[in-house]
Length: 243
Image 1 (cartoon, rainbow, N blue to C red):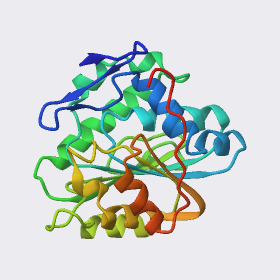
Image 2: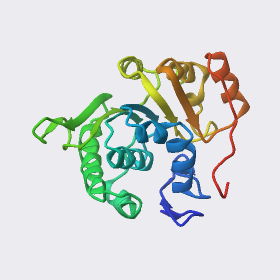
Image 3: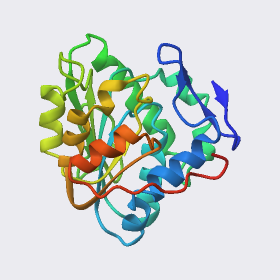
């Protein structure tokens, strides 16, 4: 665990050699780049049901902040995330996320999700995990009831055997979830090159609904060129305070 520049905490992934969130400020990055930079905060405030895809769910910080905003605004949220290796619930519990949300009940719910994800990921077989709240408040799917949230998590490697194109599970999940925003929060292109390949970025761009937005912390030239070739209008925006 690392304390970042804005005082929030993040995890360090030894294999990737990188932190899950920005060392300059994990929460600042999540809010500035993903929640606000994508236009999702504005959509939720306007009461518009919103669909988000996240590449690299990690500790769930982007999800929690987006879900918390949706609950505050009384707006429904559908969220599809890709994750190969969910972190241990105890590690995430130590990050102090309950101090970052208006509804602290979301944090224990998220920890229960992580427990379920770890159980389902134990055999290493790719699968689409789902959970939402039913009309009577009980859970529907693989995990706990999640008020105001329909969550799907594609567990396993998002890439096919060639290491650059989307897997069958990824293609199927993207096809059924046209998104208002894509949060691309994978480890850097140096650490996870396949998740930034033209083939993978094109698939993500193709999952956007009309008027949708793809956002990331990366401004690498190769990434911007791939997105432009995928048909997106590409803009480089100012980063969050502190870097």
